[in-house]
Amino acid sequence: MTDTPTLALAKDLISRQSVTPVDAGCQKVMIERLQALGFKIEVMVFEDTTNFWARRGTEAPLFAFAGHTDVVPAGNLELWDTPPFEPTIKDGFLYGRGAADMKGSLASMVVAVEQFIAQNPNHKGSIGFLITSDEEGPFINGTVRVVEALMERGENIDMCIVGEPSSTEVVGDVVKNGRRGSITGDLTVKGIQGHVAYPHLAKNPVHQSLMALNELAETEWDQGNDYFPPTSFQIPNIQAGTGASNVIPGELRVQFNLRYSTELNNDMIVKRVNDTLSKHKLDYQLDWTFNGDPFLTDTGDLLDAVVTAVGDVNQTKPELLTTGGTSDGRFIARMGGQVVELGPVNATIHKVNERVKIDDLEKLTNMYQKTLENVLA
Ligand SMILES: [Zn+2]
Image (cartoon, protein in one colour):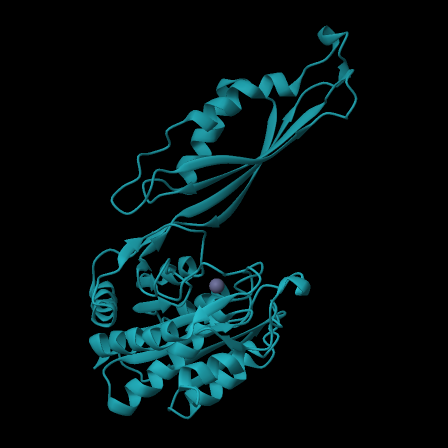
C-alpha cells in the first residue's frame, strides 16, 4: 500500500533532525509545496531562527495555519523502540520525534490546503502559513518576531489554527480556544546572617517569609470563569541556608509562578503580591518574568467553522478547553484575531516513542480542509 500524501509528507519531515532551533530543511520542503500552489513566500531569519510567512491571496479575511518545524531532543536513544529520526510504521501508528508535536500537523495542513485549492482555486479571502523553528526553545526569534513584522505593516491574521497537539484520546476531542497566562516571580528576602545561638544579633529571612508565602499560597486569586479554571499560585523553588545547622541564613530565595485566567492581568498580580509582601514587612527584591498574557477566542466564525468541521469528521463535537502550558497562540492573539488550537493526541509528546495514529493524520487533514471550506469556500 502506498502512503497517503499526509503520511508521506509527515515521514519526510520526521526524517529531518530539526532539534530546536535547527530547521534541517523542513521549511524548504513546505515552501516548495506552497509555492507550487501560488503562495508568496517570505523567509524571515532572526538570529539563529528560521521562520517563514506564506500567503495566497490579498483579500480579507486572512486565515492562517501556524506551527513549528523544530522538535525537542530525543533524549536517551536506548529507551526508543525505533530510531527517533527514522519514521517507522508499527501497529497503525507512525513513530518518530515530532510525529505528534507537530510534524503530523504540518503535513496535514499542507495537504489540506492542496486539496482545498484543487477544489476551490478561486477561494475567498487569503490563506497564510506562519511557521517557525523555535517554538520548543526560548521563543524569542520565532513566532513573536514574525507577528511583530506583520503587525508593523498592518497585515493582521483574522483567523488562525495552531497545530499544537490539543487532543486527549481521539483526534479532535479537544479544541483549545485559549490559554492561561503565565508569570514568574523571583523573590529574594533579605535577613542578617548570624549564629543560631545568638538570634538577637541576626534576622532570619526564613521565619520572616513563612507567613507571607503562606498567605500567597492560600490566596484565592479569582474563581476562574466559563472558560478558565481558577488562577493558581505555585512555588517550584525555594532555597536558603548554608547547609550548616548553626547558621541563620542571610537571605531566602523563592521562585513562584502563576497560571492565570482572563479575570486577571500582570499588573493586578504584581500589585497583589507586593501588597502582601509589604504587609508582612519584608525587606525584599522581586524580579518578574512575563511569559504571556491569557487569550480567549469566544464564539465567532473560526470557532464555529472548526467545531462544525470536527463534528463532521468525528460525528461528535469537540470539548473547548484552555488547559495546558503556554503556546505560540498567545503571540498570534495579539493581532486581535481569533485563534484556536487543533492537533493530534498529545499523550506521547516530548516522550520517548512519540507517535501518532495514521488514521488520525487523515482525520486531521479532513478537519483542516473542512474548516477551510467553512470559512473560505
Ligand atoms: Zn508543539
